[in-house]
Length: 297
Image (cartoon, rainbow, N blue to C red; front, side):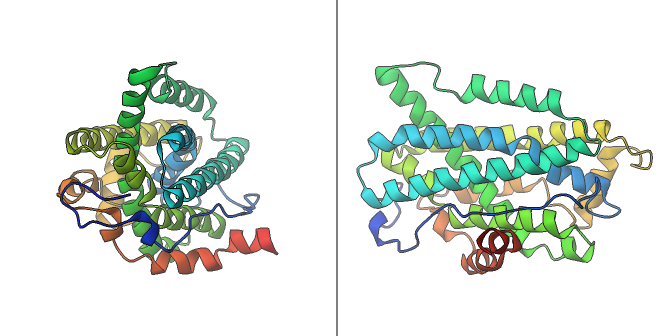
């Protein structure tokens, strides 16, 4: 694969790091409903990952699998295959957390079903054939590449957010989100490189990046509001919007402005996800994640 958009020419095979799915095992039995003590809203921001991400990750994995016949770079094919495996493991792990939260009183089935139907209706292959199928695949790859940029940036935040430990976040949930965030950083280039290989057009890249930001931010806000309303605790506080602003100000959750501030970087000619922060922190965490050690022990 050769980069476009004015970037320095770089063959994909020069990248030495291999992407592969990891076996992990999370024990949610002791996780309380509000697993960030005293932070109801921040807890539900994390819960959005359990509700929404599994369906989106499955749709992304299906699109990448559909793209494989169009990728003739063997190294990139290996990375895409590893990416699909990682996304499948993410989805199943978050479903485990979702099942546990449902069992202790957070009823989310109706919303999860609605999200699954929406994702399938909007991001499915629609039974297209020929040129229309190829163009729709390119559009989805561009959209997912834009979304993966945000998940990589948020993954960096999760790895560096010491405040989560300071607040006493339950270790199982802390490990889940940091393991997931670390793998988002690890595979941050794969969907982008797949898009560049299959299409690479700047106009589509820009359009789908804006659409990704315009989709993810409202989805997080709407989903957080839903979770807050479904929270059965009598002491959850009032005015979740004010709690959201307060938690952002204190750094307990990342700022929503990231969905706007990251667009110029992503759309800069010559940008590549490898230009994000160093990967060392992510790889170190993946080497010592309690869930990974539990699965291999």
